[in-house]
Image (cartoon, rainbow, N blue to C red; front, side):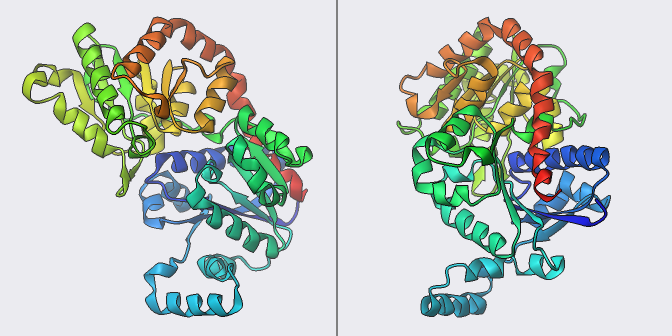
Length: 411
C-alpha cells in the first residue's frame, strides 16, 4: 500500500481510566505488528477526551516516539458563548450533529480529506450505558458523513438492547464483538452477520512493565482486590458491596497467612477506585484490625502496563473493573469477577465455558458472605483454574490480534 492510511480512533475517554488506556496501548501494539508484517504506512490518531491524562501515561510516551498522534476533542460546555450559539443554531435547524462537528473540529482540520479512511470507535462497552448512546450514535453519523469506513471495535452490547440499536450498529462497516454473548445477541437482534467478527478484547495483549511491588508481596501469597464506585452504583442493597469486601478481607486475614493488595484501576475524580479501596485500607490498618496492617497494601496510581505487572503477581484476584480482571486472566491468575454487565459474563463464558461461579453479578449480592463464598470456590480450584488459563491463553491472546482485521476494509 503506497498511500498513508489515516485512522482515527474515537470514543477514547482518557488514560485515567486504565481500562481505556489498556485498550488503546494494546491496540497500538497489535497495530504496529500488523502494519510491519503487511508493509502498510499509517497515521494513527487517538481522539481523546483528556489529553493531559494520556500524556501522563503510556500513550504520551508513544506520541513522543512518533507512533501515534493525540488530538483532544473540543469541549463545548467549557466555552459559554460558543455553547449558546450552537444551542440556538440547533434549536432553529434541528441539526443534532452540530455539537459533534464542533467537538471534532480540530481533528478534521488537522486530518484533511478523510473519504475512504478509517474511523474506529474504541469505547468497547459504551453501548451498555444508556447515557452514552446519543454520543455514540451522533459521533458515528459525523464520521460516516465524512465518507469514512467505520468500525465498532471490541464491543459489548446487552442482547436485550440490540433491537433498539440495530440501525446504528448495522451502519458500521465492521463490528468486532469481544465475547460470544454479545456476538450471538447481535445476530439474534438483526445485525448483519457478515459484518460481525468475534475476537477477544485487545487488552489481553497488553504489554507488561515491571514496577516496584508493595512489601506485602515479599514473604507471602497475596490476594488482589479491586472494587469500584461504578459497581457500587449498581448494587441492589445499599452498602452491600463494601460490606462483602470488608468481610472478604477479614476472612482472608483471619483464616490464612495471605496478604491483601488493594489495586485501583480508574482514578477519575468522579469515579475513583481509590475512594472505596482507601476506606478498606483504613479499616484494616487501624483500630481492632491494626494488627494486620503489615499484611495489607494500597497501590498508588500507575500506568495500565505497571498495574498489570502487579496483578500478575497475585495468587488470586477479585476484581470489579473489567480490564483489571483481563490483566489477571491474561497472566493466568485465578480470578473472581464482581460483574454488572454482559461483558464480564461473556468473557468468563468464553474462557471457561460458563460464567457461573466465575462471575458474581453485583445485582445478585444479598448476603454479607456472598463474596467470601465466591472467593472460597475460586481458591479451592486455584491450581486447576490457573492451568486451564495457561492452556487457552496463548491462542486467546493470538486471536486478539484479529481486532486489526478492520484494515481489510481499505485494502
